Each structure stands twice: as C-alpha cells, then as structure tokens.
Amino acid sequence: MRIGELRRALGLKQTELSGGIKMSQTYIGNIENGKRKVNDRIISLLLMTYGANEGWLRTGKGSMFSKDNDPKVDRVIRNFKKLDGLLQDYVLKQIDLAVEYQEKKGKG
Image (cartoon, rainbow, N blue to C red; front, side, top):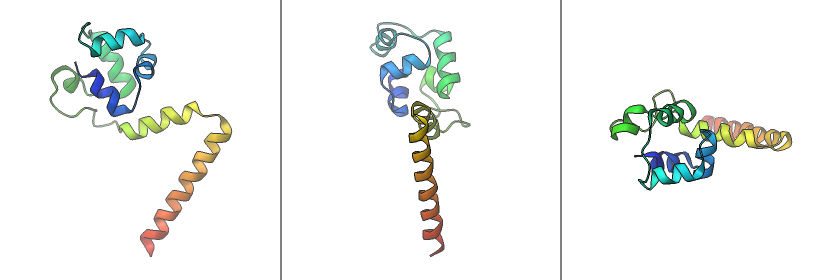
C-alpha cells in the first residue's frame, strides 16, 4: 500500500498521520511495513483528511492527490493551526510581506 509514500509527500511523521485519522502509530507502521492490510475505512479517512486520490491509493495509478487538493496548502493549514495566536500573527505578517515583495518585484 502507498500510505508511506502519501505520508512522506505530506511531510508527516507516522504519529502525525495516524493522529489525523485517529489510528495508532503502530497500526500505521504495520500497514507501511506490509504486516497489516488497509481496509476501506482507512482509505476513506485518508481521502477525507488528507485529500488523497482513491485510485492512486488502491492501484498506484493517477495522481496522489485529488484534483481539488493542494498538499502544500493543507500542510500550511495543519501547521498554522498548531501555532499560538502570537506566532500565527507573525506568520501572517511574513506572508503579507512576501506577497508585497513579489508584487513589487513583478512590476519592476
């Protein structure tokens, strides 16, 4: 199963991925090591939580993520939610400055 590939593409540790779908890290590790099989419930949770493409998860064909999902944006949102209010404000200010810089650079 391609769960390990998905997890690495999302930049997650096993504990983070397993926590996101309310499974134990050991269970996810056993799936990645081929000791356990993936059931439809886990696939559904991965689709809903991480925007994975069902066809890719099951067969390896197609893109890893559904077309409506951007893994970079999802990663930013997940990590942003982990920050306290002060750090969230700091990150938002840095994003505003980066966009402003890019816009000025594009005009010049």
